[in-house]
Length: 231
Image (cartoon, rainbow, N blue to C red; front, side):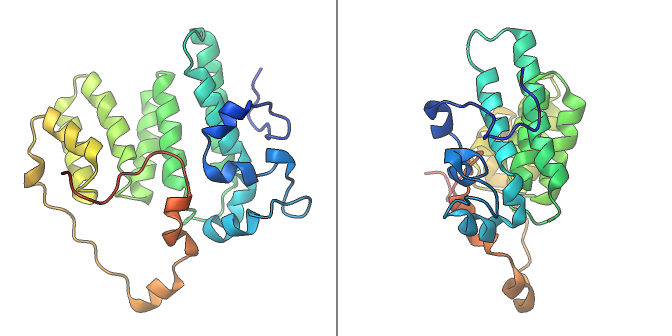
């Protein structure tokens, strides 16, 4: 029985399961015996808090959710058990979202996209659409929030909608290889995409940006394409 809200201190995961989790998971509560912000804190926790803010102290739930999601997708898992595990994973993701108070929390687009992915896997496309839309609204150039929903639209025979969505994604993230391939499959020509010109932030706003802007390469989760064009 998987219960949403379990911490890693109570959640048994194998070394192999932990090895594929994002780097920061090992420094969250309950991982490797570490505690919270005041008790037996990981020596690396301050670095992650500087990158993510205090939502880091809830992030062990996201890590648990990723383990549950990975278990659910193993071969041989019964459909009813898979659905229960995925629903529990969503509960873990939602715990972080519901306890986050920072609208600039760097992992928001990723976590919403994970919610969308899991909702699709349990055949709940309405909730998936809302989650992917939220991820795109927070970070318009976060390509996985486009590609996952576009895959669903393509499989549902909604090619025109998929093409428009992928086009919108490429305008924001013109070098995202997955979107480029999807656009080609949908009959589009990536070379014709006109990227959105992003206005530079005023100097004062740049100075006030949180440290997370330079920390993305240290925050593992859904893959992020390099901003370099195809060879």
